[in-house]
Image (cartoon, rainbow, N blue to C red; front, side):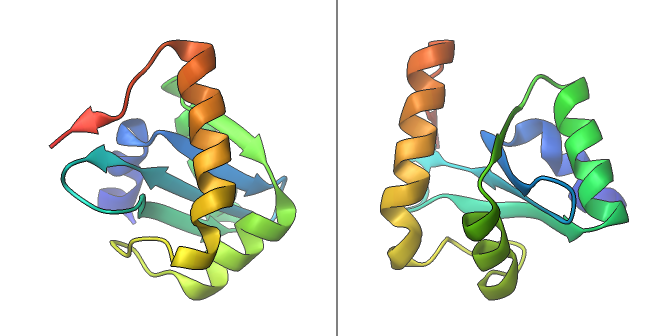
Amino acid sequence: MMRMMSAVPEADVVITNPTHYAVALKYESGMSSAPVVIAKGQDYIALKIREKAQENNIQIVEDPPLAQALFSVCELGDEIPEEFYQAVADILSKIYRETGKVPAAG
């Protein structure tokens, strides 16, 4: 859990269902074809992921269906499945536009 929590500050976004699930995603352009799950948890662990994200100014996006689905089908280190590409791309592009951040290059 400590290793997972230490990865949260590297996330591009944490997708939540506001209190029960949290999934932290990181996308590295050129390193992977899709965002990777770097942390995930439910209940207490989800709360800790959200707290760590807030401490590090990581965007938190509430999307209960997406959070639940990613939590259910992805393991740590997994790229997100293709069926979630568009939903996650929409979230990331909005974040990148709002913050001026660009995806990390690998």
